[in-house]
Image 1: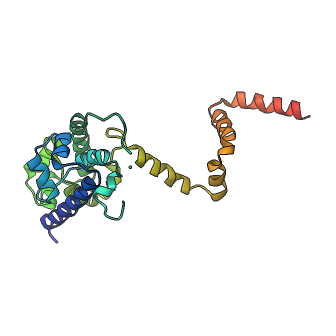
Image 2: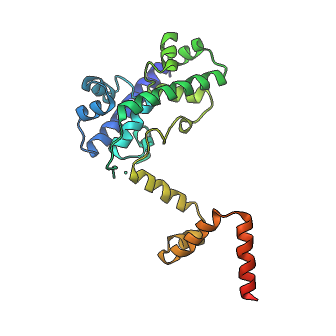
Image 3: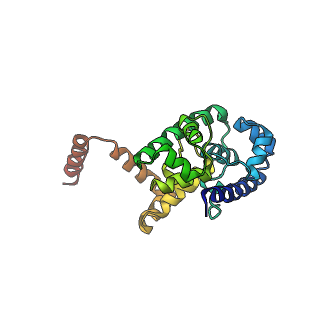
Length: 224
């Protein structure tokens, strides 16, 4: 399948996932467009798949919709909002610049010329240069092709600091990390009566070796 066909199909799929999340969040297209700093018409084209959402735009909407970012491009993935809303247009501009740098570094690291990248994406060399200057959004469908060609992961391009995760998504990730613990350790951590022991462990973890040694010697003196 040609790159242009792949991009068109992915844009349609992403548009459906975004529309589904927006409806669940009870937000209008106009509200989303205003948050992203684009026109309602342009936003509508994105949901219809006629224009591709960029990764920064998807990250921003994930924050708005209180869902995991990847759920807007991965249908197999299925978050309560913060009281303080972020200045998303400014953060989007910053993320575009950051992603432009990552895009160029990815291409150069794979030793792919701009012309070759343009052929891979089915676009002009000028558009690739616009992507790399941060003057134009990179549709996620095209970024996925770049990531695959450069043998990277899409997760390497996702940023959770500039546009932070919502509270519910942070909780989901915390639970996921808990699931990775051995069962006996997980049960100990989740037992409220063990909170004091955990606080002591947290305090000890920040102490210097000499201080810990002194505490150990004191305990031995008390014991014997």
